[in-house]
Image (cartoon, rainbow, N blue to C red; front, top):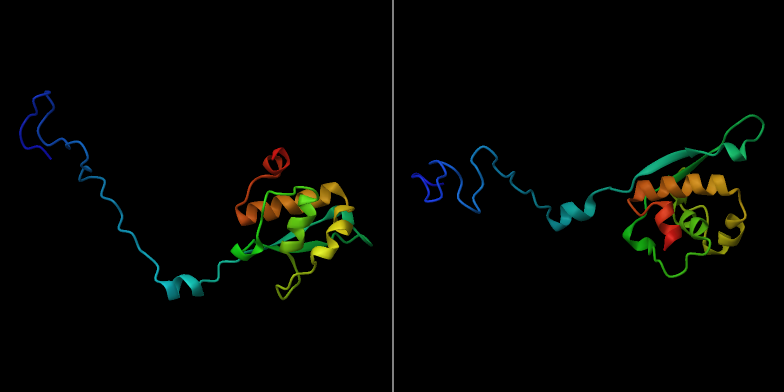
Length: 137
């Protein structure tokens, strides 16, 4: 900081260019070490009600998980995008995948509203693009 008035007329004690005022200190960064980084359980789960699939007065729920880096989401072929994403995120009570790639065609034939709700929830949970953005691309 300047202790004397600057030639441009600014008052003494104002920050010089590039300085951070003392009243707004930067928070120190806390860097994760490799072992701490890799052992973190960061996959999230969510239960999504699907009223379109109501049976005997019961609205079923589908459990989804967030995508992982190994799930390989690409933009190359957007046909049946909702069904393809759901194959990667719909899990059972133990966290195991319910569907595989051979189920995409059958999933794509399900109610569009239900698929959209699950797709939107999975996209939000995973931090990927919104459904409208995926359709545009």
